[in-house]
Length: 314
Image 1 (cartoon, helix red, strand yellow):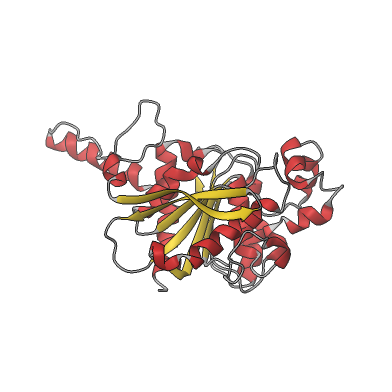
Image 2: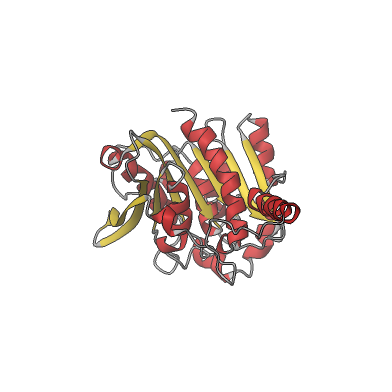
């Protein structure tokens, strides 16, 4: 389904209308804007946050991985946490590329962690999901120090990060995907997830055809679907879905490939009576988080979902 109301657009229209009928000059929104329309987090928002950067959360011999943590200043008690997973075709990018998502969600009353993970040029799947699960375990192991409610941890990611977030949600208890990134005595399960523009079924016919020529996919999974079907199945969130998995809310651009709407996943979730939903952002392409108007609409879908699934059940 499409979410019906996009509040920033509605507010802008309403303000303009009131200004016209009252004869007053137009009043600009309190959010800063860039001439190119790219996403910006207001300084006033950033001033409300504590940040702890470059925290090591996993070690593999001499290799370490870091995350950045954001938390509302002076927020009392233990807050739900959200792991934020960047995109980049599993082979590019870093934690800084999902920092704005992490900052915006932290301002809504969450502890957020924007994470690094090993990329395809360094390690093939399942290294990427091993690192995501290590991040969840790290947050649980250090919940007291960061003011985290360890029973309420969610995840959000875009593109490749959307796939990894979805897999994080559905693969709880799959030992092959847990990895050895540390804190093995803690659970890597999560309680809610927002996958954005990601793949959820690598075993589909569409993805079989795509994998035959997609170098990014072959670098990530070690070959095409025909060559390594068992790896494609292991990487598929749909393949692991069961009745114990958490609620899922998908967000995708209207102009993105229809596969990012995860029809098969949502249909199976309906059969299992697992809460799920879909927001399609009008006119948006695959990389919608970079534009303020689409970023705001993403937040309007993600925040109520996380509030309902992570805060309301505390």
